Image 1: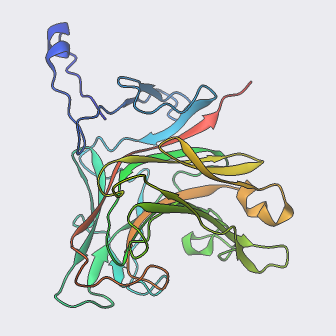
Image 2: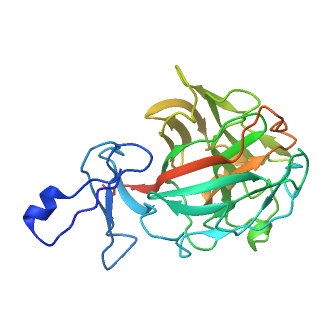
Length: 299
């Protein structure tokens, strides 16, 4: 987690209380220098996450400020039913997305006593036109929501998608699902997937690959969700354990050799996610401790 050091004196440094986000783990600090892209450094105080010796940090948001950094994130405001017949509205309200205890929190709220379309609010944040990447290691440390009809996601879309001002429709733009959890299936299972258009310009997908916890559910604690992406393949990991990989060298994977941006959201209901019912507790929270993008070191 993120330690905060009082730099006034050595004695105060030793005495400073370490703050944590929802637990007692330390968090790594980011020092941004003159060139923010090329000279970000992490002080590895607890070695809780190590990207590997082949990787160097390219970008990060540690959520250490009081408000969501508008240089990194857009709020995507959408009416209920805009995607996949989902029941929530996506808002730009600080009731649905905010910084708390050095985490980004996305909060899904049930606004009434009935279940149905437009009875919920949530948030969908993206880095479109602000932070984009082709290839890299994309990692987030998160604690997920749970329950029937709850659908959190950590994913990426091609920057050329029409939805965000581009000239290319979905799925031709490509979609990388780093992590999705479908509460109606199993709160201990997350999935990774690719969506794209094949050489006949028809929608296709890799097919979801699942990772299941040995015990408990993803709402019990924080976990790291990783994607390793290069010109040859895309690989998915949870807590350092590889669970899926896909070659992207065939022609039909051309979309995955272009720039992508990151999205974070919590959907409620939807044609692929089931529907919330009286067993689903609200509000539901997705806590994002940090999110980082690493690039392969040049040889």
